[in-house]
Amino acid sequence: MQLFNDYSFESKRAILRVDFNVPIDKESLEIQDDKRIQAALPTIKFILNGGGSVVLLSHFGRPKNGPDPRASLRIVLNRLTALLDRPVHFAETLEEANNAVQGLQSGEVLLVENVRFFPGETEGSIELAQNFARLGDCYINDAFGSAHRAHASTTQLASFFPKDKMMGLLMQEETRNAQHILSNPKRPFTAILGGAKVSDKIMIIENLLTIASDIVIGGGMAYTFSKALGGAIGNSLVEDERLASVKQILDKAKTLEVKIHLPEDTVAAVGFSADAKNEVFPTFAIPDTWMGLDIGPKAREQFTEVILQSNTILWNGPMGVFEWDAFSQGTKHIAHAVAEATKLGAFSLIGGGDSAAAVSKFNLSDQVSYVSTGGGALLELFEGKELPGIKALR
Ligand code: AMP
Image (cartoon, rainbow, N blue to C red; front, side):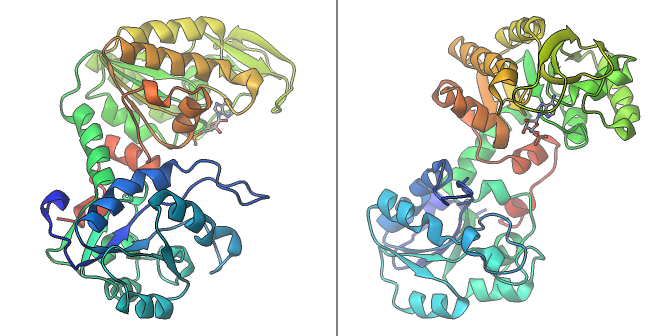
């Protein structure tokens, strides 16, 4: 694979696929967190400093029926201009983009409108990819968060550049950190998994059984595990169709001597709301009408103990409904425990999405080893898959 750092960008027009899919306030459309824009800056600046110009492609939100002002990249244009401290041109259509690149000088940047506004992006249209390819002389993919998708602006676009294609600096950093754990984790290696759905995490758990020493299970998925072991879980979230796979996982873990830690107790509520009356019960004995919304105080200590004796930590998914204060204590304690273990010398990798939002909410982002910008992409790497967006760069 062509190495980004060795490539000469002098007088080249670089097509750079980034992930500017930042969270925005649904009412005011203001950017809530610009980490993803910040994360792309080193790659953009490297190209500009090397004498090149940059054509930026990104997706933004999930527009269903073509252009939608609420998913327009114009929303990020001002922030990008401020962060780069130079004007950024904007092209709404392919025609505008084609015209703009003709006059694009070294040191200049063009941002093209949301790739998902163009028909064929998510279907991986070759024709659209070819149109994107005409915009530059080389292709760099720095959108780790989209690397698990085979879309026109990722895999297909790469195919138009037999040699002049490469990973950007962020993509390199993301894969290096994941490989650090995947190839040779310093043990004990604890994987902490939470979030709502077991089905999303079955494959990652199966793959982790071959590399982790401990797997900590929290969040809504803990109740499917509890039920599989004969626990009473009341009204808690459960995926009955996954009970058989969960039992298999528990058996396999025993054979492989991987410890699976389920929360001893649970903060359960009488309904799914921020101010619902709540009480602590053993996770295996939740009364009929109650639903588990967070791990309990004993589980916080139980999990903290496991985390503190770890040398490698991977965390994906909150321990409870951390968006609501009454059910955020479990996630908060785990975030602090991961930060503490990192201080003691452990390597900690936080999966994107909700876990990244959680460490940020508790102001601990700079106290862990690495916070990934990818949610689904990171999960797929840990499922043992090769990401199509990365494969296409070879
Ligand atoms: P996921 O996308 O599967 O990682 O799930 C993240 C979501 O799971 C967050 O929005 C949490 O609020 C939610 N969550 C965590 N624990 C629970 C629970 N016990 N019951 C319902 N939802 C939960």
